[in-house]
Image (cartoon, rainbow, N blue to C red; front, side, top):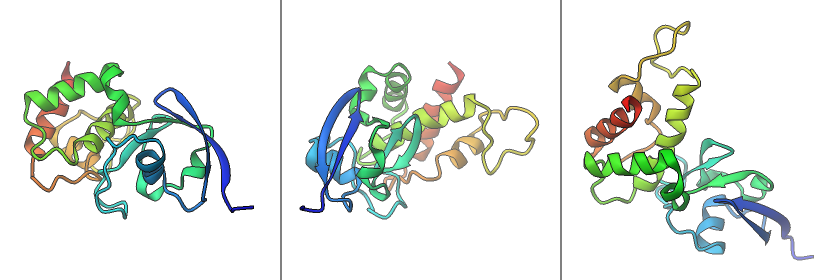
Length: 170
């Protein structure tokens, strides 16, 4: 026995049968075992959000998630956003509003935006939502709070907020 665990990952609609050391993170699995390098390794400590992917529609930090815990769930990475209706709109809005500079954090920002817009549509409040009895307007303050887990070292935040606002108002 080599200590590896057999799992089936469903990534971007494709199933992958793998045998992994239980210490392998989902981020390393995506990048090193599946050659899906669009998801970036930033801080590798869950603080920057560069590694954000969607697991069953929820955004997570792939660097903090053991790959073996994702057996049987649906994982969406930036590679699938080109064929994703909302992902395509978000990518176009990021381009239109210059919501990226070096682009390193962009894949995590876009995945997080797609999930954040869904969370908002489902009426989930944020830490700055004042009235919990009504759906919150997606103000710049709401957008900034909801995207607080994704850092941009270049400081493209104004463009990112403008891009998200455009998609939310469309």
